[in-house]
Structure formats: C-alpha cells, structure tokens
Image (spheres, rainbow, N blue to C red):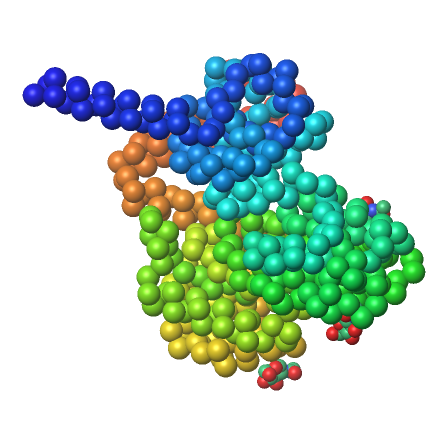
Length: 428
Ligand SMILES: *[C@@H]1O[C@H](CO)[C@@H](O)[C@H](O)[C@H]1NC(C)=O
Ligand SMILES: *[C@@H]1O[C@H](CO)[C@@H](O)[C@H](O)[C@H]1NC(C)=O
Ligand SMILES: *[C@@H]1O[C@H](CO)[C@@H](O)[C@H](O)[C@H]1NC(C)=O
Ligand SMILES: *[C@@H]1O[C@H](CO)[C@@H](O)[C@H](O)[C@H]1NC(C)=O
C-alpha cells in the first residue's frame, strides 16, 4: 500500500518535471547577467516558496508558448539560487516581471493574465511608434488590438513631435501607429493630415487639440488625451489596473459583481453587468468624454473606496479627480438603462449627492474601515488564529501599559513637577 502511494507520487512528480522541461520557458542562471543585453527578454524573477509565483507558473508557460515565434525570449530566474541576478536587477518582491531590451528595463505592474502580459511584451518589443506601410496591415491590427492610437501624416511638425514623446512614455500601456493618408484609405476618416485618432472596438475618436500653437500646451493636452483614452470601452477593473484608470480624470462607472474561485460570474450578476455595458455601447458619443465605464469582480476593492459593504450586484460612480463617489437611489435590482442614464445626467450637472472623497477625516475613516474589514475577514476565516494573533500582543501590551501607567496614576500629582523640572530622582 505504502509503496503504491510512493510510486504514484513519483509518477506525478515526473509528470510535473517533464511538463516544465517541455515548456518553452528558459531556466536562467547567473550567466543571464552576461547575456541580458542581447536581444529582447521577458523574465519572471521568482522564489520557489512564493505562492503568487506558483500561481503565475501555468500562465507563464502559456506566455512563452504564445511568444515562441517572436524575437522575445521568455525565461525565469530562481532568485533564491541566483542572488546576483536579484541584486543586479534590484528585485524587491516576487514575482517581478521584467521586459529587457538593450539597456532598457521595464517592470510589469498589470494583471497577471496571459493576454495582458503578452500585450505588454508586444508593445515594448517594437519601436514606440510603429509605422504601417501596407493597407492590408489594418485588418490584422483591427482584429488583434482592442485599443490603439493612429497618427496619419508626415513624421514632422509639432503634433508628430508630441505624439512621439507621448508614445515613449505610454509604450508599456498602449499601441501607437503611424501611417500616411494614401495607405490608410477608407480605414480612417482623414479629412486633413496630420490627424490623430484612437480606435476602440472599431469605433474611433479624434484628437481635436491640433490648433494649439504653444508647444508646451499641445504636449500637455495630448498627454492628457492619451492618458484618458488608452482604455477599452468596458474593461475589467482589477488591483492591477485601477491605479492606471484613476489617471483618466473621468468619472468611473463601475458595475460591481462577484466572481467565484473559477472566475465565473453568476447569471443574474452577468445580466446586470451586460445591462450596464449596453448603456455605454448604445450611447458612446454621449458619455465618452466624461465617463469611463468598467466592471469589477473584486467587491473588497469597491468596499474600501466606498467605505461600506456594497450590495451585489451594484452600480457605483467614482469621480477619479476628487475620489468622491455616487450611488444611485434605486435598488440595484431595479436599475434600468433609463434609470442609469438619468443618474449619469445628475452626476454631470452635479445634482447627484456625493459621498466620501479624500479629506483627512475621510482618510482616517477609510483606514479604520479597512482595518475592521480585514479583522472581520480573518475572524470569519480562522477565529482561533485571529484571537492568538491579536489577543496575545494585546494582552502583553495591556500588562505593560498597566505596569507603566498605574504607579504614575497613583502618585501622578507628586511626580509631575519633578519630571518637568528635569530631575528624575524620586522623593523619599
Ligand atoms: C474630429 O471630430 C470633429 C467633431 O466630431 C470633426 O468636426 C472634425 O472634422 C474631426 N477631425 C478629423 C480630422 O476627422
Ligand atoms: C509633456 O507633458 C508631460 C505631461 O504633462 C510631461 O511629463 C513632459 O515632460 C512634457 N514634455 C515636454 C517636452 O514638455
Ligand atoms: C469631479 O468632481 C469635481 C468637483 O465636484 C468636478 O468639478 C469635476 O467635474 C468632477 N469630474 C468629472 C469627470 O466630472
Ligand atoms: C440634472 O439632471 C437631472 C436629470 O436630467 C434633472 O432632473 C435635474 O433637474 C438637473 N438638475 C439641474 C440642477 O440642472
């Protein structure tokens, strides 16, 4: 019996081992330091004990598989064994995902999903602005990219100059292309070159600040525009991208739902999410300038922003400039597209009530709320451990406090003067 278990274990072990061996991920060592400037590398810095790294492992194998035919080499470094590598890249946490290209080094901060990591590498592997010289290329780009920027015109002039600079800055986050009017043809409605567009799911929005003559002002207008436009119409908001999305300075309209362990959303919540998506898809032009829509499957993230436990599913709108939030008066279950539109109008004309914000009182309340939530989650998960964790130190602390304070309290009157006089001697 025992030996059978052993054998099963052994086979399983071999299977896992064979699996890693067959994967396209390169196992790198200290020698990587000699070669990392040659070509392009996408590297995961990991530690064998780290749970997040283990979770990333299958994703990483898929990433490597996906990028196999490209010039990007995908590898990983066990930082507990090859500490020189960890030191030289100043690795502080695991896993850290790096894209290396010559002397340039980019750290990945987004979601650890195959698609997002692959896009990150693909954006960085080319030049910041990629030139399109063939009309047919647009078909591939339209198929593969949910969001991209397109500049149509000569590579000169101030608009080109600021576009190129913005592309340098935002290269890890978005795809930037350049082409000429005769190549673009019917793919973009160019009336006058140069023109600048952003494409989202085959709809386009144009940049209208061309006329600005002041270079600095044109630069900052374009930067803000790129920053606000680089997200898809209805993205999933996660811990990985929420900080980026806050930089849009738009109102963030969030459908809040819950996901189970398998990342599945229940049908009624799915229905709610689709209803919210309908609002933006039907009225893109109307809401595009002031509102960024999205959905979130991480209620805790919303709870800590709203400082309350939001019902599921629900709708919340966050003003990303001031961090205020708005909640519709109707029950979420009774929300209709029409009710949502009325609600958004009220937000636009500033007649909707607002909550929260970023004042110091609110910040204190938020910290307290988060502490309480963490504590109650721990309590639900493991009451005994929580009691030991918080109870023991609290017990010691109160003993110590008692020891320090009580004598003082008893004869505080007598000692006060002497302490303030700087003498630490006690009266007899
Ligand atoms: C950009 O959009 C505005 C308004 O929708 C339109 O008047 C203008 O002609 C467009 N510009 C280009 C270059 O397409
Ligand atoms: C352009 O604007 C961005 C953001 O406002 C700024 O970081 C950058 O330094 C500016 N570049 C120039 C050349 O002014
Ligand atoms: C956020 O709130 C401020 C203050 O109420 C307001 O001026 C601003 O327009 C709001 N932002 C958006 C995108 O509506
Ligand atoms: C704001 O918009 C709502 C919805 O359209 C409307 O009922 C309300 O009267 C408006 N308030 C102001 C102050 O314009």
